[in-house]
Length: 335
Ligand code: FAD
Ligand code: EPU
Image (cartoon, rainbow, N blue to C red; front, side, top):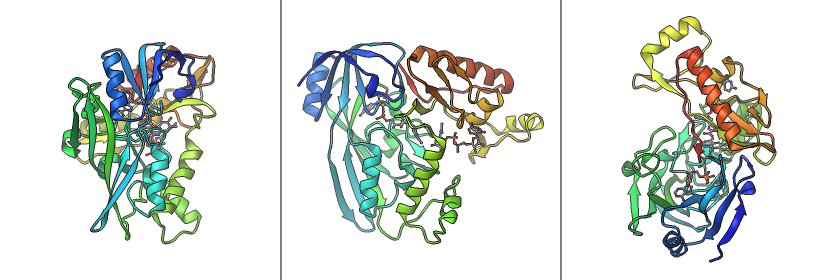
């Protein structure tokens, strides 16, 4: 396996900061991975598509890029049981399932990154989360170098959360992920956001899963900055979940505040709205800023650093806390 020294990571993460790794290698299977972990048992970092990372400095150790590929399926009753290698590109994998007319991933079209990173924060979009179609994953235990299988319960999925962001943090490398998808006829989820509006505009009365995917892609492209054009890592913060009791007092002051009841006594508030109300939307500070169309997305215009993004994020957190009394927390992994 080729290990490169002083490798630039600029094109390997979507913020596009000028940072480098002391050592860099790609792994295509579990044996390659074990070899790398033996060489760098502690100072290593597993990289997928780099779309949920904010590097604030050079990485002093080995960055190991996941290139484990492979797609398998089995038809069982009304379902397709579909498994992919962790280094598969998420969106290409979604398109493959749609080409085969297997339903379940369409609302999560165009999310950047790899299949292996998707369970870590239980990716979600437009009313669907990975956990809704998840069966199991296999992962290499970095300490024992044994492969372990995790079912849905063991993954402890939550909103942008899982076992792998908590007790299991940095202990495993996900190798493959298995989903249970539907065969026709599919149950569509078109109630979230503007999906139905887009389908109506296109006069699609009986949408197929492919139509839902196209609608989601259209909405995402109209709202979210393309990392190929302007550096970003999607939503920088998670939407805060607050106690329903807090809602009334906030409403008295901010009657226009959007909110989503979670059905368990808590309410999710869109952090993008909170940030916009604090006056950050479209603001640029040097090489970084808050996106003009989506305040939840922090952007890098070029020539800047992760530390600048972090400083901006801290200032935003402080002003949201001061104005609303609500703490917002990063979704992005800061290194
Ligand atoms: P990376 O950024 O490479 O890694 C993220 C973390 O996971 C790191 O800590 C890394 O060490 C770890 N990791 C990666 N692969 C593995 C592995 N195989 N085993 C163990 N650990 C691993 N997310 C959503 O949920 N919904 C969205 O709608 C959404 N939209 C986005 C839009 C844009 C424009 C961007 C840039 C990002 C968006 N994201 C969204 C965030 C991002 O796409 C997801 O978090 C994605 O799953 C990250 O995948 P990745 O391969 O790029 O992970
Ligand atoms: N809003 C504003 N101003 C803004 C942005 C948003 O007022 O600048 C308000 C609007 O009222 C809007 C509401 O916030 O109706 C929600 O906005 P949006 O539909 O854009 O969704 P979001 O909550 O900002 C979440 C996810 C996205 C996901 C979309 C669609 C989180 C942290 N983010 O964004 O995921 O694609 O919903 O499901 O949950 C990501 O995780 O990186 C990501 C992009």
